[in-house]
Image (cartoon, rainbow over all chains, first blue to last red; front, side, top):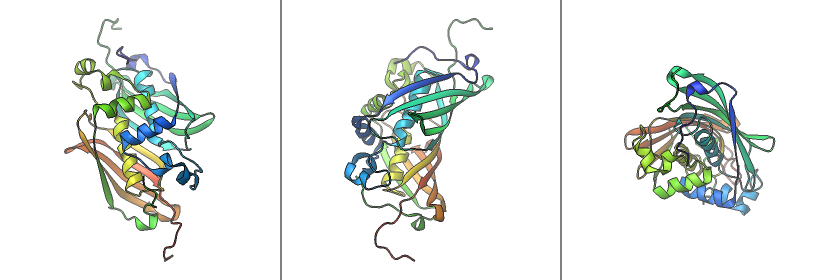
Amino acid sequence: MNQAIGYTAEELTPGMSASFSKTITDADISMFADVSGDHNAIHLDEAYAASTPFRGRIAHGMLSAGFISAALANQLPGSGTVYLGQTLSFRAPVRPGDTVVTTVTVKSVLVEKRRVVMETVCRVGDVVVIDGEATVLTPKRVAAKPAA
Amino acid sequence: MNQAIGYTAEELTPGMSASFSKTITDADISMFADVSGDHNAIHLDEAYAASTPFRGRIAHGMLSAGFISAALANQLPGSGTVYLGQTLSFRAPVRPGDTVVTTVTVKSVLVEKRRVVMETVCRVGDVVVIDGEATVLTPKRVAAKPAA
């Protein structure tokens, strides 16, 4: 839970970055299958998955994409951020037990519209598993703060 | 679980469509918060959320995006589909109790590369809550089927 206000557009500059790390468990994959409705065998059935080009079970791509949401909402820009859009390229599979490190980096800031484009990359070790861009609306500063 | 092979590129034509419907519960939102790590108060804390422009709790955008993954993997193209990319525009909030209807429609097919672009739209009633496009690799036909 994070009720403090995150970074406003004025406080963000290109290059600012934050990372979030999470290890994907079998329980995570089962839970994601239940909440999304995606019960595809490639995620859940080891015998089937072993017979595919992936040679074993893989996590749902959208599960790792959820980590981007977490990094944006929890860290940068942080609480009060409104998610406007996301592009995702799924570049490599993520397997149960893998630790996904998600890094979000400010790419451009449109202060007057409070709009920020963030580069969003998920890695397992040195391998980029997802890359893309998020577009977000940054929080409004509501409380006491010098105006200029 | 769906181990049958889905549609191959040859079997898909622009305009083919499938839909998947899911009602978002409080339990879904809590589970998604746990698996993604996104415990932002806007999703979980009614008192805080009521004080924001959303005037109440909203579901994670990536939770509804998971329904796109489900529609692609379970229905069209179906099992064996490899997710290559997705664009998402989050157009309107989804609230606990809302029924999200996700429709995926074939937009273009590149048979020789097995690559298909799908239009992906999530609606609550008449309101588009997410739109975008998926790029997928369709399954290879492995078993007996007339070659031409």
